[in-house]
Image 1: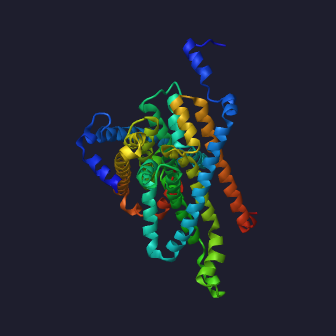
Image 2: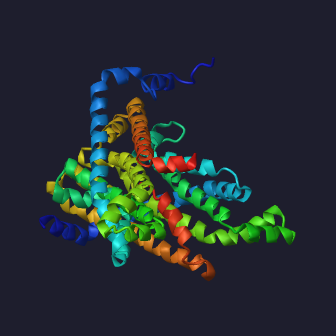
Image 3: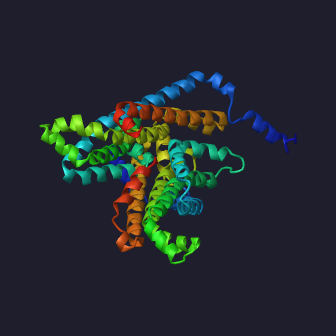
Length: 230
Length: 241
């Protein structure tokens, strides 16, 4: 065992560990509150984005002339750096949770729209024609035939959107509602490693758990895909 | 509306453009310098690996894992952690390294996909003509993969320029400083500055995207343009910024 080169270094590494149970114990309520806010922000943003994006994708699918503009607009939104989006929203929406939520919804939109549209595009033409031949109207065919068949695409979009939203929500720290991002930022400013790493690990775990849940839900909703595979 | 007037006033003040260290021009210069270094470093790491894996036809799983893992790691976390690692220290280096991490997935995935997308018959024909592994890679696979490489470069560069804004949250410099400083002063006092910063950053990201789209088109040989498959691979790789 080698001795540390200087007492200062030894002190720094002792006082500023990358992980600390003590920190977890002393701050469990703060950490849990941040985790709760983070989860809620993510879920709300993805749900709202899905509610807007799926009809938008259907519109783009039905009216081919709208496909270009809808994809272009969501593409431009996606290129905007998150900090710029929050900066442009905050003066009008206010410093608060709503600004973060709107920003997250806008980013999640693109991924859900694109993947839903791709899913709808992959429904075979014969299936569509068969539905028509059986007397399905446009809406009935959409709801009972095309959307269920496009579900894998929708689920892929939701999964991508969720994982990105979990990571992106940390930027909400700019307006005081970054969930676990608050801890990362506080840890950075206090030069306290354990706080940053704890929050980071929780962010990655949250993304992983939500992703697995969506993947599981997707599997349950599309039993025919499993049957075909086995 | 009041904020918009303030933003116009802020943008019209020449000192806000030229002020050493905190003006728009010096911050823009720093922003572009950091971004360029990160993209360059990303290319140095990702292209050889991606090209080799694609050439050998191995490691597809690794490419997917790398892009999925980096998607889940918040930029803010890396930007906060790297300066606290003693070997890296504070300043521009941790920012460049953090951005490099986010530049690697699109470069790696597109290099790999580009080489895998080469028609196997073309590869066999080249081997039949007696080309060695290196010659095959250099003279056949690489030129055919140019559209993918260009698309990957564009995605990576746009993402890095956009993400570099976040460096301001950890006092790392770049154009984001204008926004971050504005929020620090409070909206009542600096709402205009926040909007002006937001507009500048948005404009920068959109211009880089536009310029690189033109470059991408220019370097892609005519017969390889407008391939739908490339667009798809880009969508799947869109990551957070």
